[in-house]
Image (cartoon, rainbow, N blue to C red; front, side):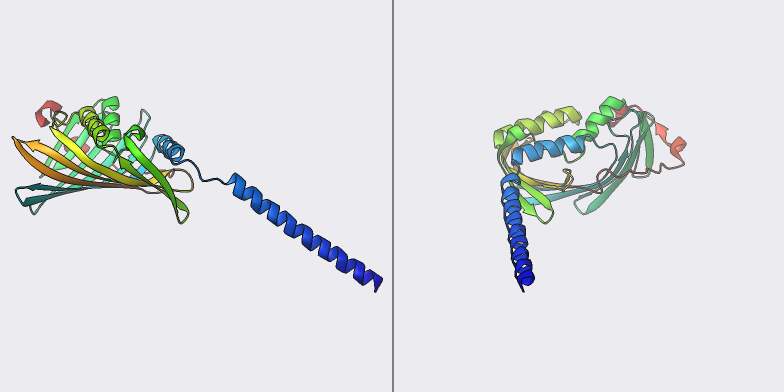
Length: 266
């Protein structure tokens, strides 16, 4: 009987000890697992994505132009595979579909060994492209990241195992930032007269710290041939399996592409 009472007391003490340990652990977790600063989380994700050498991405841009009560929709969807990014052995393939006024314009492009290859409207063309220049163009066209300096507000919220960062953009800074990107891309639109009136969006960060989805929504006011045009632009991008090796299969008929001067393509 004494032995049983002793065992019962020991059992209660052990149980109490386990409970105490559990409470202390929970308290410790609540103190140590503070929500990360959204700004730090964002910067870390941008840096981590920037270190990737292989990417499997889909990107979409939807623009709605409105003038004098009439609207025009422009949709562009891109599927991109890339290997050797940030290295001297960059290769990528890109499938682009642009929808405008009921017509679809499709283009397939490749980059390898210092040449940019493109096939569109039945034409196969190629031209030499400097590695540094093509890398910069790719960086600016991949859906991009918004400069943290252009954000007036950035909040974080758990979304399953991921974290959703939602931001509001400063219109003036977003305008300057966008014009700078256009200038770096050398698309001929770097002098375009436009002003961003409203901007915002979100980034979805996975448990490994990569942002696997980006969304940017902007309202712009453009001056086209002396007339003001309101433009709503929605840009999305999705990154699949960050960190996974990407295999690119180049077409066997690259030798059939006609070499031209890049200047002829504008």
